[in-house]
Length: 262
Length: 313
Image (cartoon, rainbow over all chains, first blue to last red; front, side):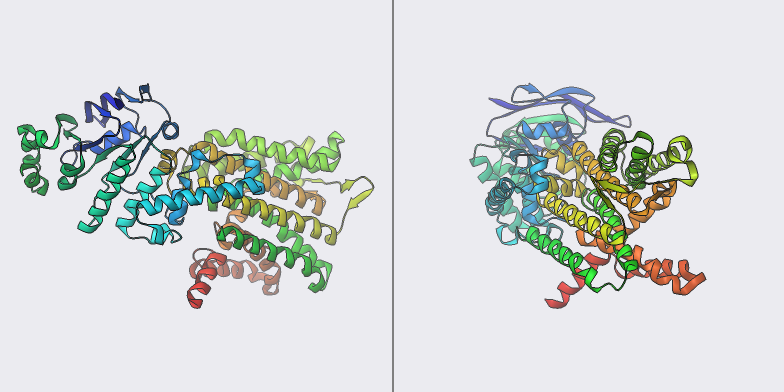
């Protein structure tokens, strides 16, 4: 069953077609990867799906509903959440507060009660904190819950973003390069976290450059080059696809090229 | 919530200080200065919710301050309504104006928002200067004393208590808000708007909320100042006053409740102290402010707090 679909999505930046009529359909509870050489349009595609950019053409469907021109903040309520390639951490807040912000949609928003800190708000803050603690535990950050987020190492922030996105209780989670800049140990942690999330029945769509990780965890892989779809299929399909090999070899000096051939 | 408890501790300390200060201060002159500090603190506290927590600048807050001030002047004088009704009306008008103006201008960011709010403040001040029939024009107008039934609020000690108690309540409300889901949303917007949106926060709505709330704080403070002074002039709503508020917030510490009060206190008390330098008063004030900002970069309160916590650990 399709939970997230892109139909002929396109967008231009200053006359350059960054994404050119890209279509795909993600099934419920699968891990779906979007790969491609640098500049292929992966992050732009993510921004289109999550409503951060408005597409010039095409549609996005979530759970069968057209959400193409919905404001970004409405998509979270419909079960879509994401992380960012160039991390968007609330760096002045503590790690746990970052995750608590993710509970926003599940909290009662009565301004008067908030201004007076009524007992109901105190109780709710407590519940929100407990949920956030569970999520920090899921990504292995429980020990640093009260540290200011800006002081945490890079790998920890990557996982903090995942915990924060999970706090919205998404049906579909978009992960933009969750293992970028991570060492082998950190990548293994990210791998384990993604598997745990998928194990909860949450659909995961990821953009990732670490081919070993992509090939290992993805049910299906969608390959972009210069804004266009060049292949889609299982890891072995994609690896054997001549267009994919050509695209990666064309991307000069890329270690991904070597990996794609293996 | 340890942060909330710590903030309650700070508010309690402020309350105790306000309660004992009249026993220490030698004359009503000092009580008058203290009352001014409390009144400005209320305005700066509101501005700090907007700037320090939600991260949106306003260079026009004296406009809202002026609306509160002129409301308690115009209401009783021209419309024959009691001062306290005029005060509530003024605060309401300021809130409504912020709601209407905030919608379009809060779409702007950074310098553009600064210029737009500056323009808003100038426009409001211009109305007070030009509508002489209602406002007395550039000379301003007298403000009748606040009366509740048979009681008239006059004198420094009375306004010391009125503004002091209000400041404690205003601080409590600010502290509560910051620790609530709404406060978390505002702080999140400050650090990343796109991440806030993705988490389901209606960013435009929350910015507007902070703007309206800060306008209400400013208007209330403005009404108090006018009632206390017994006179209001366009300078009350002027550009320099707006800059003064921003300077107080930054000097005391953005994102710090105590900082709002310390900032207001420094910029209210210092000019009084510096009168001993006669002609060099303004030079001394300017130099002190520069030195403060160089050595206490995050603002007085946050910088000192960081210094002490580093020493103790």
